[in-house]
Image (cartoon, rainbow, N blue to C red; front, side, top):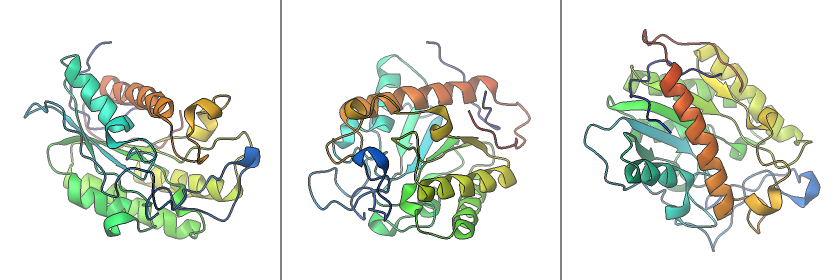
Length: 260
């Protein structure tokens, strides 16, 4: 089970536009790199969730790409927005800030000149309780050392801006049992960076996210999430967030990277 150092909230019961097109075509006819569609998706600026937002609610800041902006569906369908509005609807204590930008990666520049590091700089502050990174296959084709370096800088930036916050890095997913080499290279670089930084790493590939349900969860472009896919990721991320809240060490010290 993953733990996230520094989480202070109380547990509550219970490309540039789009993902940038990479060179590797996955089995089952899907492109694993995030595609650069020019129309038919969410707007290029990622939505910030707009629920009732209690002033002192613990904030989860989502750092990501177009798998988190609602691209291909709508900003209101994006999984961070669904978590935010679900919490408010049930009198929960979370406020989710969605900093994700289409086309972005740790090392890859997306919309609004965004990288994961710049998203941290713009959205994480002392009130942040959890920084949740998701992705990104937009970094396919970048040297693994450069990805690891950019990830290390992003994690360090999050720790500096929100010293008491938990940090959770969720790697890129795959929609096939035989992920392409580019996606695996990105995943492995992030494992290295997270381990060195003492950041919890969750591996959707090892966990089998999406497998057996791709036609339902992935949209017509074979890359971005359908509305059902957004709800699926909402459930996965909600579980991870709750585990962070329930198991966070009170000391706020860093913990080793681990896969779930």
